[in-house]
Length: 285
Image (cartoon, rainbow, N blue to C red; front, side, top):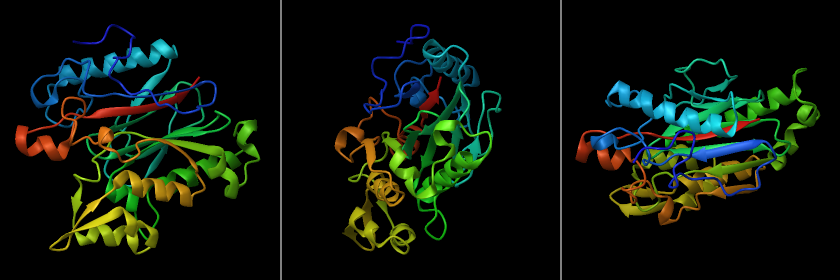
């Protein structure tokens, strides 16, 4: 069943967090769209092999929901490449901008991240003046020399807080208190009982962040089960973010284990020949 115009599907996730006034957030599931086959039904990815007309119709459904909450708002769809580039977006930013995270201080610019096993991370400054979203697969989360996509988002937050055009509420924020003024919501991702990785993944995290060892469970033959959401929580806390909501690494959040609700690239690509993409969105009035 497709969505009624402007009405979020009842199955979608609405973050349960104390977001500042004027900040809106949601995360789609696979419910409520028009796609068929492995993309059924609300596939929002234009690069996965789904019919372009179906993807466009699904994106229009999401845009209608966003605009139902905030007239004039627009979801900006990035070209995600498992990197650490952060885009500073506004309502006119074109779809297809290459980045794996985005931040916004302007109203109506909807930071949008697509996922199907990778972890979506939504961020809001406590003033409500600045929001962001990150696509945190293991490569982007680990990054290079211990600096990944979440650290890159915070560098952009700091830069925005210092520029002359920064909102008054954040203009005087100092770098070492920015994390304490920021909250995060983690969406669904591949869970810690499904994400089997090799030693190179463990090393990418543990070499620079020894505490990450607790997020890897040995499976023998050099393999490990990795807790992606747990790794993100460690990185966020290292940045000073202590208000973390959403995905607690329990089974209900696992994309692989909840086939009727979530897309999963790892589960569906081999079995079905394709997988759709969900979207996590955050914006301010």
